[in-house]
Image (cartoon, rainbow, N blue to C red; front, side, top):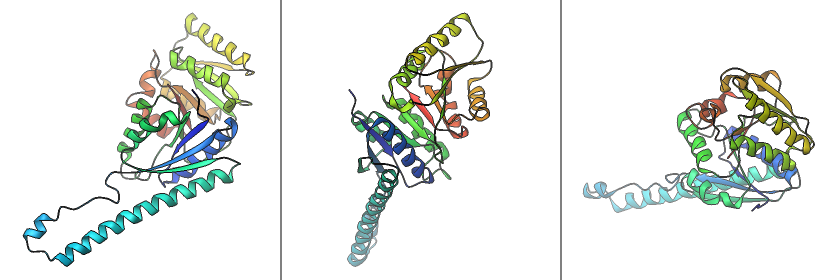
Length: 285
């Protein structure tokens, strides 16, 4: 069941503006509305100190009241900051086109929020890095991978700066997720008018050649003249080289497969690939 809705996750980082521009591009081509979520951590703005020790040490009631007011003010400022982020994001998206936008401020775990709300959208857009990227790179990568693992919807990972998308590289291994990605491209208005290339990283076999030709035929039925590329080598290196050399603006990958692409997308290489690749990545389940 489709919802004609895109879920965009913003956090006020430098990547959030790119998330908004990519969300506007996706929503505009599909005729979708956008729901923007800003998820504040459980401890953000609402952390309460245990002052019982201070009471036992004879702290004055007036000081306790001042600390309580300070906690309340911090919580209020955190919520106002979150609302400001959402309003700025909404303005960026609507400046890119006539797009219906809703905003949602939530508190809790980012991945739990995505899991709970993903059924209200057809795709999720998130930035490659967030506010804490400078000091918590591993934690952020963990969140990205957790979202990809947990979500049953396509996840679009935006890079730092938006640029118009004209050339799309599809990582193809013949697995079910790769076939689903091909079918998605064939059916989705998002890819109308774009140039599509299918790439297999590894040793060519008659079976993989046939699978690539069948995929190209499916795309041709949808109006695409898909180029077939077969390169021997490690998937992570091959995909990075081709996207850079041939100037593709989007990489589409399946989240699971029966070749080494599986370890590329779900595993220790995932985060590093997303960080190093200078184009956005659409991950299919």
